[in-house]
Length: 130
Image 1 (cartoon, rainbow, N blue to C red):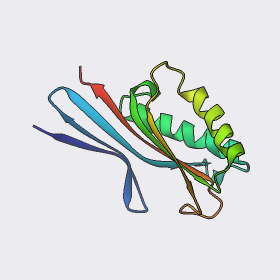
Image 2 (image 1 turned 30 degrees about the horizontal axis):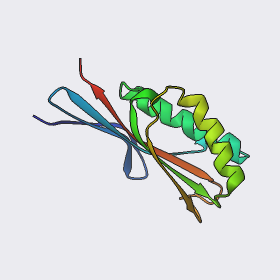
Image 3 (image 1 turned 180 degrees about the vertical axis):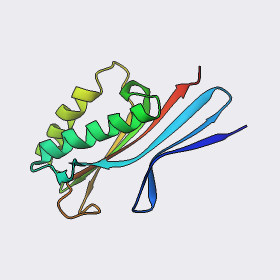
């Protein structure tokens, strides 16, 4: 039997995290997390990257997982260049400290849902049910 769970629904018409479980495995899909928290957008790209990754970790935790359970990571960066790529890599390394890193895609985009946002990170994680 397949079981679905919708965690942290958002007023804008989507759910931050959706899980589906079957045969002892739980798959966790985390919607794109951005550099926005506590009612404000980070002032710099690095601050937004920190916030987005922390938001991602918080969503994973709400579903019983952590960064070490992520199997696929997608990152979208506005006006992607070498500096932003390197900054994102440094920030990501603070949260993804384990040896086996997830499959990863990094995409440069012209804009995100709100003009001041500069980064969005989404993930798929898998855990065994106990």
